[in-house]
Image (cartoon, rainbow, N blue to C red; front, top):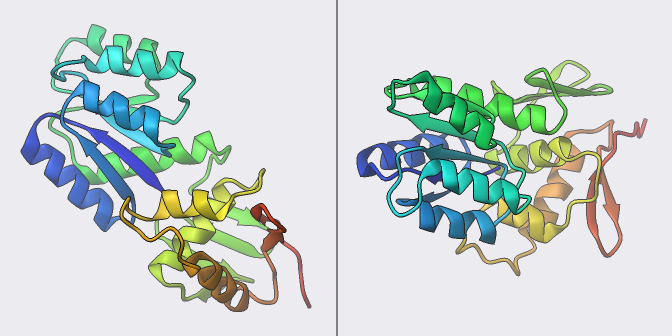
Length: 223
C-alpha cells in the first residue's frame, strides 16, 4: 500500500515515514502543500496523511484541490489547532478522518488501516474469502484456519489484490503500490511472488492471471 505524507514539521515527518515504512507501507513525503499537490497528482495513493497548517498551500486548499480533481483516496488530517471548526472544515473539504496533535502512532496506523479497508468496502480488519482470511491488523494469513507463513512482500501482494478484488490489477500497478520509486519496474519479481503465493495458499487458488492485463483476486478450490 502506498501512502502520501504531507507534513512541514521535519521531525514529525521523519517519524511518520519511519513508522509507516516499518509497518510495511511505501511512503512518499512532502514538506509543503505545493509539493503535496504534485505528488497527489502524479501518483495513485491508497491513502494520505495531510497536516492542515502547511506552507505555500494550506492543507484545506490541498484537499479541496485533490477532491476537485477526482483524487478519491482516503485522507487523514493532522492538526495542532484546538478549534473544532478547523476539524469540520477539513472534513467538509473532503478529508475522511482527523487526528489532533500530539497523537500516538499506533492510533494513526489503526485509523489509516480502517480508512483503506472502508474505501475497499471492508468493515472488518479481517478480510475473508472462502477458506482464506487475511488479518490487516496482525498481518496474518490463514487458509482453512491454518496459519500461512508469508514473506513481507508476499503478504503485500495478497493484501493489495484482496483490497482490489473487484478489478484486474496490472503488474505495473502492483509495483507502484508495493515498492519505492527507484525500484526496477522491468523486473519479473511480481510474477515470482504470485507464483510462490499460489503454492503457499493451496488448496485454494486465489489469484487468477488475466492474459495481457494482470491479476484478479478470485478464490477457487483446486482440491
